[in-house]
Image (cartoon, rainbow over all chains, first blue to last red; front, side):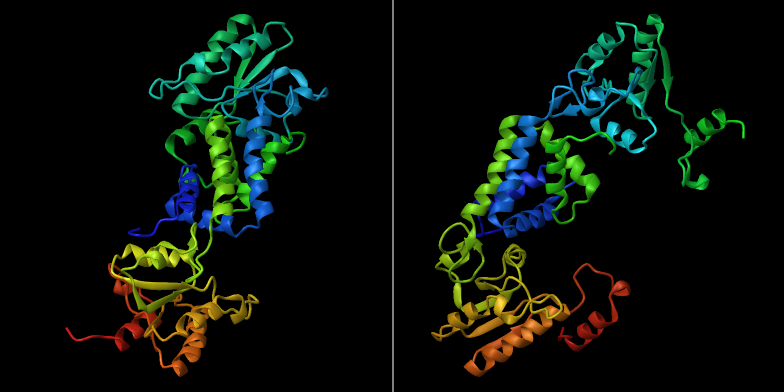
Amino acid sequence: MAGYHVPPLERLVDKFESLPGVGHKSAQRIAYAVLNMDKADAESFAQAIIDAHEQIHYCSVCCNLTDGDLCPVCRDESRDRSVICVVEDPRDVFALERTNEFHATYHVLHGAISPLGGIGPDQLKIKELLRRVQDGTVQEVIMATNPTVEGEATAMYISRLLKPLGIRVTRLAYGIPVGGDLEYADEVTLSRAIEGRQEL
Amino acid sequence: MAGYHVPPLERLVDKFESLPGVGHKSAQRIAYAVLNMDKADAESFAQAIIDAHEQIHYCSVCCNLTDGDLCPVCRDESRDRSVICVVEDPRDVFALERTNEFHATYHVLHGAISPLGGIGPDQLKIKELLRRVQDGTVQEVIMATNPTVEGEATAMYISRLLKPLGIRVTRLAYGIPVGGDLEYADEVTLSRAIEGRQEL
């Protein structure tokens, strides 16, 4: 942009461009939208970023995101504490909660074991999970890590730690997604769907 | 999300979702990325929004965005002040500046006449343009509004105001885009390209 620089605008575009899924053109478009907000809206936008950072931290039990000491699930007395569903990411908890079918508790690992990415078991919240199962109330741990190489390896690693403690360790079912098209399902998914077939 | 609410996170997701081109999933992804920033980065992000809002305003001559009194183009003494290129949006100035071929000045309307959208000539920076051409230094006004119904109407409207003042009013050429494929060009563009054909 020979000769044309508006530093505060460029800084704002750079900030938006650094976000995931936002390219240069989108960042420009967003920055102009922010400029077109009225002053109060822009200030409350900036404040929302600061607030989220200051107020959100990990739940002291399940390591999910919360603004209190305990997350809403761990605070909820009606939840079944004998089952823990282990997920990689807080977003996975939101996805599972949306089903309205799951009434037990969660544990968020904040990642998966990935030797290539330099992430080992110590960087995940595995110690916190082991501490939770110490007192004997937990009967089953459902591994709901992603169906990727990293997610599988993490599920395997954790199940080997838990099984000697006499805890039942299960894994989410693999198969064809509901509403999907058999024709477009990949071979691995299809063979897993055949393996896991059930009586009608 | 039955039972699961983290208000500061939801507020942040809502803010991002209100931006153009950002859906709910992207907003969630971005909000998590913001949470994963370190504190200093998040603060400088918030500050960039506030700064852009406080420091950027319209150039007192051409109505483009700037953080000074005049924008860099109007400040530049080497620019040819006898030609004004009229555009709808500040982003159009950036696009034209990137060509490195245009050495005159701009005028930013901040929109186009759109009776359906409730935007009339009074909401655009047309008065400011007329004031600029009063002193007789301007010889030519190039209409570079978008090739849409609204852009065309705006170009027409302005040219009718300027022509009686003895100013030459021109329009950007229509035609097939360089690198485009003739096969995929629409009929209107193609017939405009034939009309505007030039000697080789």
